Length: 149
Length: 414
View 1 (cartoon, helix red, strand yellow):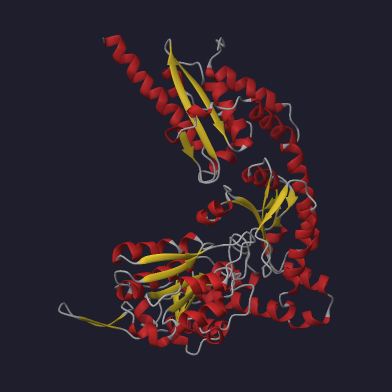
View 2 (cartoon, helix red, strand yellow):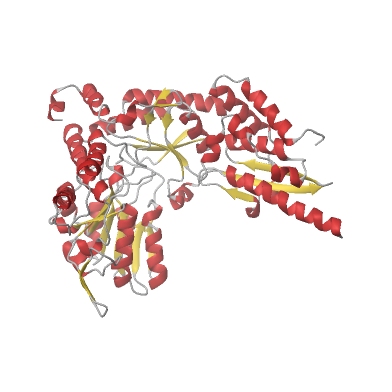
């Protein structure tokens, strides 16, 4: 990922994209399209320990740490959730643990998708954001440890 | 409401809809189509008024007060007990115990009757289409007492057979706990035959009436069940109030459940004696307001059942089923011969949750997911379904809106 923009800059780009949509259908068609375009996660990663279980849909999340940056891959069995997952990856992947931990992710509210986060029991989105930040925290700790060594 | 019988059915429905203020609201700028009635039904004005009236005019703690408000509140609270007795066709009003809901009613039996009577190797029979609340309490009892939980299998049509039940019955069967109607599929179970066979084998029977109380005429004496549980909020009443009916002789023998005020006769530090039925199972200050309002919900339910019978909801079920069957890749889960107005379905290649989200954006409220019946979903090899469930205030026009919205959702997702 060669995107050198900050997390907030990427968020603003998404907000700009959504501001073009007048109807709810356009908004959802866009999210559904993102979901369809996000590559399916390799079966070898679809393990129990990578599952973020919602009450209804499932999200799989894996992370990798390279050159001080965190890279995420994820998947979901529900396409709208997968589209939102795709946006979160687009926003957070490739950034430093510190930036990820500080990200407020206000764009979700600003594009009118907050309701999906409110459904805490029915999808794994809230838990997914938490898990993305957990990975960042873990890698930050590893990074600091490496510096000391 | 008496005049309803004299006017045409369409006008009846409009008149009924007028009694439900929530049906006037918009969701995502569209008129609400509420098809999640199996989860909870909406409330008619008289139920809302009963709650307001209690808090505005005679809020008081019941049974022990000597002042006017306490007397009025006690009398209203106890008149609901009589209304429930009549609603269920029970013999005595002390057979009616107020709980928080069906779940608490089942747990009450599991933790009192179950813990006293289930010994190592004893058997409890449930069915494969039970709600988690009619599975987990029995698992807890079986785990503690080393009992055995047996499960009546579910057919591809979503039915359970009396033959299969017979094969599971044994001299060790102590209790059978069965849903009258499946919440996920709408199947009406052959409870009368099950009760009769269970009794012959020396077992007692609990009927989970959470889904049936609002749709079917309940007569616990005719049915001859030993326990019957239901929730107020699914019969057009408030949340937080439910009922456990139990045969008097069984309830009298059962140990107490929760200890505290109201359920005692005399307390000393050496020994406490317990109150009589039904109070020995109603510890603490009960849910007075919701109990009082429940009477008005039951009155409403009885009125609509008298006027419409099962015809209206059955008509909605038939109409919706016919419409859904025409949709490519759609499979109805639960095709039992005897069903209430509940349709569960899946669409090939689409997650139920995605359907639910896109329907909601068009003002249509359905339930998606496993409906608290994970073993049943596993039986069908699916993660969940989309479930539309109807109430008396729903209309054919709303089904048309739902079908159009569903077509749109499918088009967006494919």
